[in-house]
Amino acid sequence: MERRLAAVLSADVAGYARLMATDDIATIRVLGQCREVMQERTQAFRGRVVDAPGDNLLAEFPSAADAVEAAVAIQERLAEIEQPDELRMQFRIGIHMGDIVADGDAIYGNGVNLSARMQSLSEPGNICVSADVMNQVKSTLSLATEDLGEQKLKNFSEPVRAFRIRVGEERVAAEAADWMVPGFGNRPAIAVLPFENLSRDPEQEYFVDGVVEDLITRLSAWRDIPVIARNSTFAYRGQTVDPTRVGKELGARYVVQGSVRKAGDRVRLSVQVIDAPAATNIWAERYDRELIDIFELQDEITTDIVGQVGPELLKSERNRAMRADPNNLEAWELSGRAWWHLYRFTREENQRARELSLQVIDMDENFIAGWSSLSLTYVYEIAYGWASDFETTIAEALKYAERAVGIDPQSSGAHTILGSVHSMRSDHSRARSELEAAIDLEPSLATARWRLGTTYFYMGEHELALESIELAIRLSPRDPFLFNALADKAFVLYDMKRYDEAIACAQRSIGMRKDYPLSLYIYCAALGQSGQLEMAEAAINELRSMGTEPTIQSLAGYSAFVMPETQVHYSEGLRKAGMRD
Image 1 (cartoon, one colour):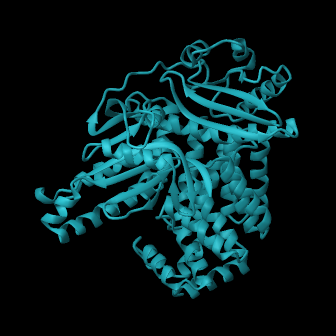
Image 2: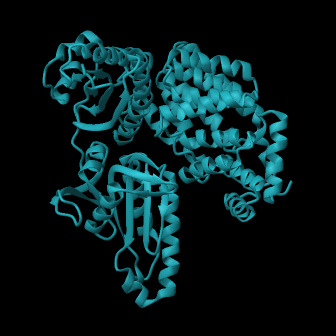
């Protein structure tokens, strides 16, 4: 069993018994349509449907924002389904963010139970969330909300504060102060405040300060967002601070706070990142570790924090850019919009990301994020099979990735993209060099670790590949590329003939994004090798539903980068699964 933090979505049909009594056949047919919508929208926002008994649906998401975005998208899409008035099916949705216990595919715990209680408070066609969820998303929410106050819930001793989200009713968001340090091209800054030593042990001050100083140093190496200098932030040592006030005084949109408590040979560190103008948490984590080697522990925790904070900050900035006035965008906001569209992973959104990237470059030809996102649009064309001419497309990707590195050779992100392009060109030695350079610049960069892992795999170094990909997943467990990293991990496991593990890993990837072909191909091959032919046939049908007939030959674009013997092994599994040549 595994305990983890997750956002849990619970949904059921309002008045289901009445609908069944009116026309059971028609009700079941409409329920099937609704389930397809809910499954698709859940996966589109990185969620996983856990169970769907009767008229209920239970899903988990890596973040509260993902769960709320999915719930809104579900309700909006369900409202568009044509139904007779007497059979109109509306769902109540509840969401809670909390601890769950996972036992295989099933999940249990208060996180699940509270989401069901939130569902019972929801109106048909709307959403109800707990205060824990609202605190995470209120700065990015553009919908009307209603504070339901403290609610006494069945089987819960303490009352829980709940909020209702009214889908389709826009609210006017209060404009947060746009505090920025001048000279950084409208980019926001982050300030890391001194952590609180809860143990009151003077010797612990060295460890506490060491973590903070390492965080400042490591975040400074990550060049997307400027970091306020230590001398400025440590002026707040020993004070009870209001993050909003500190953010305004330092010119920082984001503030990092934390505390450390030592008990015996164990240490507990809690850290949170706060959107200072909105006074809301965008990320929080707790670390419980055994205190053996203080420097090793300090490095481990720092690496983990930096790896998770970076993607969360950029996600917050992408969402902020999408809410900004489109007629008054500077390069940073425009770039944020480009990346937002890029991470939708569809052909149409990819084209929109390319158009916005070109606009960013027209606005500022030295804006590195514009060249990076432009290069990635061509990488995605190849990865998703949209490119009609591989050589032309990869040449464009290479040209723009090299331009990004030329503008800023110290950008770990630019080196990562260039390394990825070289990897797709089967120039694995140059790919390895670029990706190792990225990691030297930023050891916590999960994308670089993942892409280095795939490069190791292409070179036939399976153990190194698995180690690197697994580290990437640990560093950024909510990463928008997680489904992709899991697919690559499944590929490595498959080639190591660890078929059951490959199946489980591919299932996780498919649960996050079912329209990524590589996950389904690997899943089919592993099922074929393990003799699970009925499941393999269902996976082939899923590939077929994407609009083209899946064949072993059509796989060539996905396996072109690996060793010849791996391609043979891969084709063998697909043939056993029933896929034709």
